[in-house]
Image 1 (cartoon, one colour):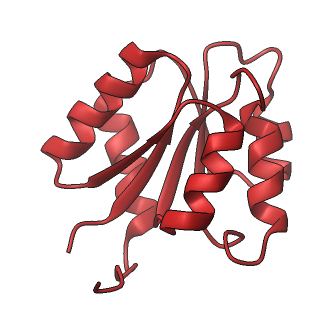
Image 2 (cartoon, rainbow, N blue to C red):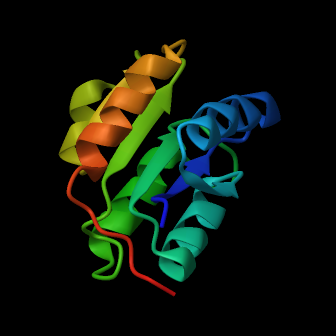
Length: 128
């Protein structure tokens, strides 16, 4: 069974781009467009990893990250944070909030896939 990845970004182009590369690599996708949807989807779907943009409407990525890390059912899910504005959301702030890694846009698909593989290594997906 493929690993289930939650992708969170308010930009449709970025969602499609990440989805394309991850599906080609054999991952199953769940998509959300803001932090609030991300928290709901992570709680409902139990993904093995979250790839989330830092700057989004309704609830930004760092707020969603903090909420995911406070909830016992989602606390252990690794979160890869993405941002196009590294000055506003610093690496230290994301990592101190519980992010597994912080990538600055633009990033290479290879770099993202390497980080996903590293953080999902050894994770067995539950059988449904």
